[in-house]
Image (tube, rainbow, N blue to C red; front, top):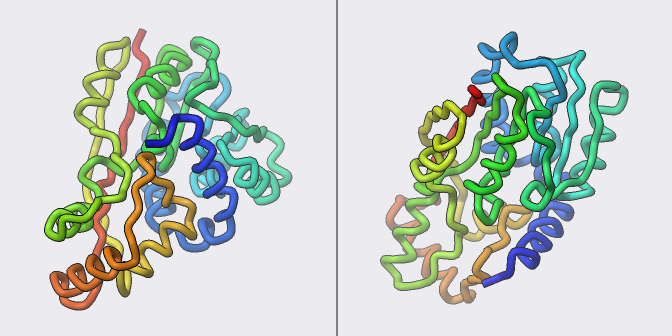
Length: 263
């Protein structure tokens, strides 16, 4: 298993090499950003005064919504990858209310009661301990402040997991956040926590194109250092195609979490 530092370095390197592909082909992440913005819309006029924070900006799928929804609010846009931050700097050049910085949210210390809103689209699943990091972030909300997140939950990739079990080969996806455990943990503080979950399906021609998509979009680093041999990938591909009638369907467990600081 990788250490926390090794995994963080792998994530940084992987996303830094995937900026252009990620921006053009990460449809699941873009759809999640659009839906998260729709969820934010009813709360616009209840967000307290003060700075807004985006964690894990990527190539700006959700940043685009923030600039539209809060054109006059100071917004700090952050990501672990310098290349992702640089991409957003160029993309949103001229937006005077935006500031950009690289940041590791897991190690960063946050000022208490600073932010009126914290948002993160498809970033929480990369934290070594999502509950601890999100608790730390939520403590930096002002009273009445909101934290809104979208991320893949622990029921993602059920096909992949099942077919690996069928074949007796390693399942090499990372463990995704357990939403029930996360909500219980966050609800122990002075917060109201709610969530919504559903599923989205993505189709690929075969396992090779699916794995290539994960690698090209920067989302392939495995926390435990697991990998499959060429023979195992071929077995998985043949089995998957047979079970699904000639295509590879992948299910994402979408989680949308809303937290409000009430005291």
